[in-house]
Amino acid sequence: MERIDLEIQLREEKGKQLVKQLRKQGFIPAVMYERGKDSLGLKVSEKEFVKVISTKAGTNVIINLKISDKPKTSPAAKGESASTGKTHKGKTVMIKEIQKEPVHGNILHVDFNEISLTKTLKVQVRVEPKGEPLGLKEGGMLERIIHEVDVECLPTEIPEKLEIDVSNLNIGDSVFVKDIIVSPDIKILQNPELIVMSVKPPYVEPSPEEAIGEEAIEEPELIKKERKVEEEEEGTPTKEEGKKPKEEAKKEQSKEEKK
Image (cartoon, one colour):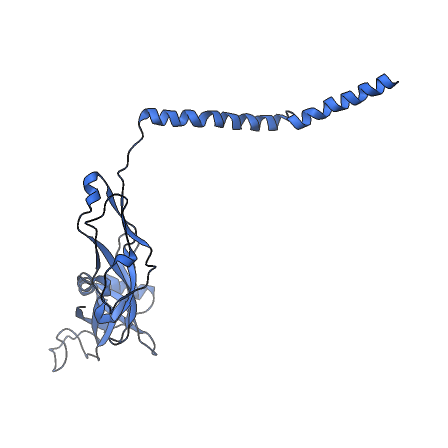
């Protein structure tokens, strides 16, 4: 996994108005979480951060943060960056979360997590198809059901993506999580029986005759239901209720004959 350097500054600006002003200046407010320590408020150039997440690794990139106090206006002294002030010890981090504005997609905030290169962690890795399924020649369509899988491995072993060969898939065939090939150092955490991709049969629209036939079958049943509702509302006697008056009439007739 590629490691990228990123210069970042300590952030003193707090509160909605100051943070809003920070964004207008081309910075993204950020926070770094360190194990056993308080979180650290930071700000990073939006332009530089976009470059980092635009690499092949995407948001799974390993970043060497070079944290400085504030921008320098005087020539750089020995051991200092030309664009920043006093540089603190670098931190190895990964992106924990990126918050975006829902309408335009602008980055509003970034969370970093300090990591150890010798300890495993859990990340999501995207799954990509490789090749063209045989079923596509017969009009089938490749449906992607799972786009990312959870994996556990060392930071340096995180793959940029996981490819699945779909070239031998016919219509009705599927590939499962258990079909994803990874190195022994990577553990996939998803259920191995979950379907990742499948080749669906082509969609066939029903003919006008078939559509009319389906409507004709459904209509009598609908009318029957409506009539039943009307009878219940009007109080029309049911078969069971109709029997009772007849039985009472017979009893009255037998009483008169006895008299």
